[in-house]
Image (cartoon, rainbow, N blue to C red; front, side, top):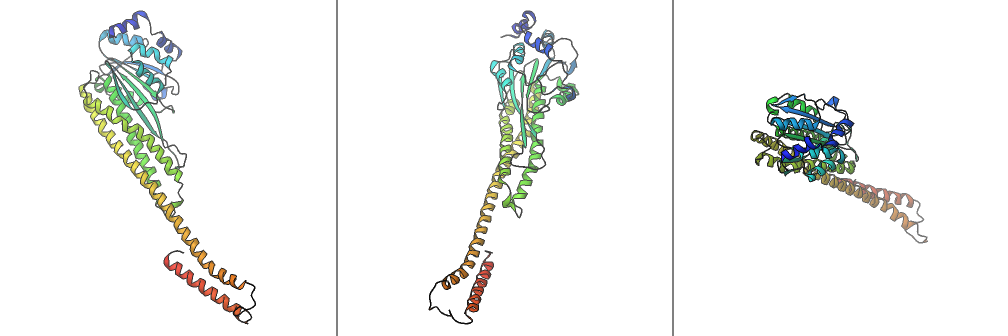
Length: 375
């Protein structure tokens, strides 16, 4: 479908009533400042940029798109937070977005990827947040993930955020940073995509550094004097959280490589070099995540080995004491038999002799076990 036909739909036929209705239902909010973002509800924010500078223009998203396409300059940035299918329908029609990409953007829970639909790029990025906790337990949440979907065209950017927490993956500070650098923003929609990817990967590195602290604490506890008493559930929980981090970090490598190397009409050539830099940072996060995976497996194996050793030591102690107790048990068992003719049965010092023999035998066994390390 040509852009001219799509524009006639928007301006002439008025088929974006759902988008206009959404704008009337919800108050227009400026997402350029995080304090003014009513996060936790679906939000539509439309800003027009020309030559890297923000324009204050009246009207809704359809009006902004019309002005940009009539002038042939600038682009529109539309930001949403967890829209429903009904709410996103008008946006999809306005920008002629592919139905498969629209479904992914609404449903979320997607793997990081990069899709090309005609002249539109659709990128899915997993956001990651480190969850602060005083002590790691078997139920502690260490890593919380969300998603950012980015639609990039020659004259528009649509960002869709998903996350359980309101401030998760907020793009307000990112927007402010871009607006403070007009030369960068003047590169067009691809500059926004780069900035989003760069922020996401920087968050990966910060989370990786924080997780390193948890890894160090668990490792120290496992190899401490009483490491065998460490709750294995804590190690398994950390392993599960690392798996969630790995699912966010590792799959993003291929999309970034494609953005950095494959020419595209919607990605400015100068921006491709910046994507290579982001890919380098992602490689560091990927390597550290892989190292964590190997290390947590080693920690778990070491913990199981220490538990096994501790159990063996306990069994040796039990066996040693059982051997010592067996001596008086055997002697007393013999003299407990009801026979009239037994050695020293009626001897005046017989009792003392038996007790002495038992004591000496037990002492000899005790010293032998102590010398061998069993006690």
